[in-house]
Structures are given as C-alpha cells and as structure tokens.
Image 1 (spheres, rainbow, N blue to C red):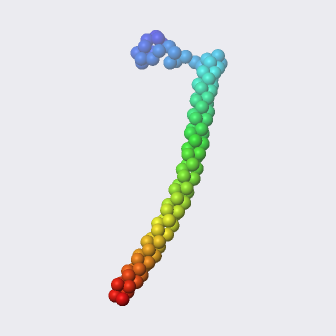
Image 2: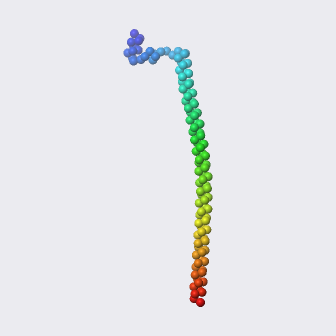
Length: 108
C-alpha cells in the first residue's frame, strides 16, 4: 500500500529514505570536496587577477613617466620656439635699421 501511495505521488524510494550517519557522512564529504575545488578555483583566480593588477600598475607608472617626459619635451620646444621668435624679431629690427642706413647712404 505504501508503495502505491509513493508511486501515485510521483516520488521514488530515494525521496522518502531516511538519513543515516553513513549517507550524511558521504554527503558531507562530497560537499567538502566540491568546496575544496571552489576554494582552489578562487585561489587561482585571485592569483591571476593579482598578477594582472600588478602588471596594470606597472603600465600605469610607465605611462605616468612617459607623460612627464612628453610634458618636459613640450615645454622645451615651447621655450625654443619663443627664443626663435625673439631671434626673428631682433633680425627684423636689424634689417629695418640697415634699411634706414642704406637709405641714408643713398640720399648722400
């Protein structure tokens, strides 16, 4: 009669089995093993991500140094360009002065 009731409900015998110490120990061992695998996977992922972050930190530092060098080079080029501007202005003044002297000599 019990079997018919179990069959009628759509259950199986394993659905209504009582927990024994041995079955519980097997389940605990199985879950512990799965948790160990998860722990190992998490540790591996942590190592991998740590290496990636260290590599990224190194690249960021390298990028900062490169940016500083570029900024220094830009400032140096600006300084050189302003000096060239002063040189061109002084050459223009010299040319204007020479033109005035040439005109003065031509008029005499």
